[in-house]
Amino acid sequence: MTVSPGSRWGVVGENGRGKSTLIQVLAGTLTPDEGRVQRIGTVGVADQEMASHGNRTIGQFIDEQIADARAALAALDEGAAALAEGSPGAEHEYTAALEAAEALDAWDADRRIDLALDRLDAVADRSRLLAELSVGQRYRVRLACLLGAEVDFLLLDEPTNHLDAAGLDFLTAKLREHAGGVVVVSHDRALLSDVVTTILDLDQSRDGLPRVYGDGFDGYRQGREAELQRWESEYERQQSDHARLTHDLAEARNRLSSGWRPDKGTGKHQRQSRAPGIVRSVNRRRDELQQHAITAPVPPLRFRMPELPAHPGVALVTADGVRVADRLHDAVDVGLASGSRLVVTGPNGSGKTTLLSVLSGRLEPTNGTVRQARNARVGLLPQESVGFARGGPEDVFGSHMGRLVSSGTLKEDEAIPLSQLGLLSAADLDKPARELSMGQQRRLDLAMVLASRPHVLLLDEPTNHLSIALVDELTDAFGATEACVVLASHDRQLLRDTEDWPRLQLSSVPAPRSPA
Image (cartoon, rainbow, N blue to C red; front, side):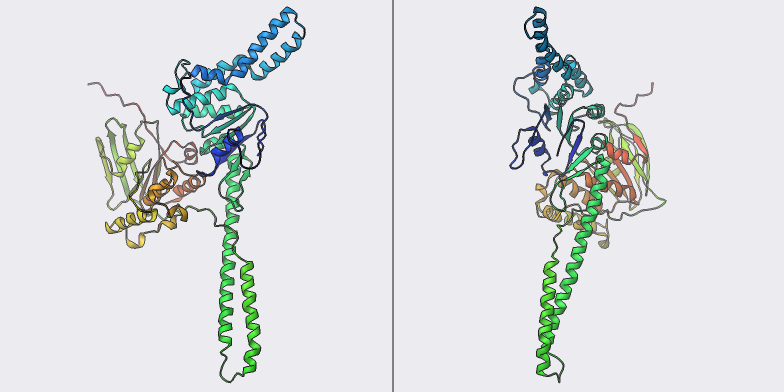
C-alpha cells in the first residue's frame, strides 16, 4: 500500500486478522518478518490504548507532541537575533527557520491542541497527571494532540471507541480536511463511509491475499459482494463437477465389476475383449476426477435469517405510560404489531436498555402497564453476552432448543440447527462456548434469540462486536422479516440505514413534576 498526502485509507477485517499489527509496522514500532516500509515525513500514531507514562503531566505530554513547532519557533527567534546583529549567514538561517515555522504553522500549535481537547471533551488541565486519567480520557488527550500537531501521516487504531457524538463529528471533519495521509483501523462504518477513499480488506479471500477497494466504503461494499458471489459460484461449480465425476467413476467401476459376469451364453473371448475398454473407462474417469479437484477454499459464512412468524392484525405488545424509577424517566406509549419497525434513540442513561427489558417482560415498570398478546413470542438480544454454561456452542444451542420445545414455546418442526444460520464456522463450533471471542459469543447470543422464532425481536446495540459484513447482512434481514423489529443503537451507520423507520427519542433528564 502507498499512503500519499491526501489519501485516506481504511483497514477492515475480523478480529485477529492483523489490523493493529499493520498499524505498528507502518509506524515503525514493529519490524516485519518480510517486506519493507519506507517512511518520508512525520508520523503520528494513536493505538487503541495509551499508557499512563508514569508521572508525566498532560502539559508535558503536549510539549513532547509539538516539540517540532517549539523548536521551529526557537530557531526563528535565534535567526532573528542573528539577523539583527548582522551575523554572517544570518539571512539564510532566518529564511530557513521561517519556512520551517510556516510549514508547521508553529504559532498556532497550542491553540489547535486546546481546540481539539475541547471538541473531544478531553481533560484540558495541563497540570493533571496522565496516570490520574481513565483509559478513555488518556486516549482523547492523545487524539487531540495528534489532530492539533498536524503531522504528515496519521495512523489511528479504532479512534471512535471513546468519543461522543460531538467528538465523532470533530474527528470526521479533521480527518477529511487533513492535508497529509491517513490510515484508520475501524469497525465504525459511518466513519469509514464519511472519511476513507480507499479500503484495505484483510479478511479471508479466494487466494488468501488482501484486497484493496477504491471509491470509499460504497466501493468496498460493492466490490466485496461481487467477489464473494464469484467465489461462491466457483466453489459451487467445482463441487457440482466433483460430484458428477465421482458418480461417473462409481458407475464405471460398477461396469468393470459386472463386465466380468456377462449374460449366459457369452463366450470367454467376448468377456476378454470387453474388459480392456472398461478398465480404460475407469482410469479415464479417475484421471478426470483428479484433474477437477476442488481447489477453491470454502467461502466465508453468509448469515441466513430464519423465517419469523407474523400475527397480522394483532397488537403483540402494548405499553401505556411506562416508567421505571431512576432508569426510564419518560412516560412511554408503544404499540407493536407484526411487520412494524421502531428505532429507540437517546443519550446514555435515557433508558433505552430499560425500555427493551420492560417490553420483553423481564422488568416490571414502576408506572404504567405492558400487555403481551397470548402466545406472542418476544425475543430480546441484550447489549452484552450473559455467558454460557459448559460445553461447545452446539451443546449450548441444543439445550436452549430443547427447553423451547419441551416448554411448548416451539413445535418440534420449528426447531432449527445452529449450522443453518451461518453465524459460526466449523472451527468456532469445536471451541468451548466459554472460550469464544466477544464477537463469537455475540453471534451465539443472536442465534439463540432467533431460534425462538420471535414475533417481536428486541435488539439492544445489535452491532456490538460484529463484523462489517455480518452487520450489513443483519440490517437487510431486519428490514425484510415479517416479525416486528425494535432496535436501540448508537451505531451511526445503522441509524442511517434505518432512517425510514419510526423513531422513539428518549430523554436523559427526568420529566419535571407538575406543581401541587
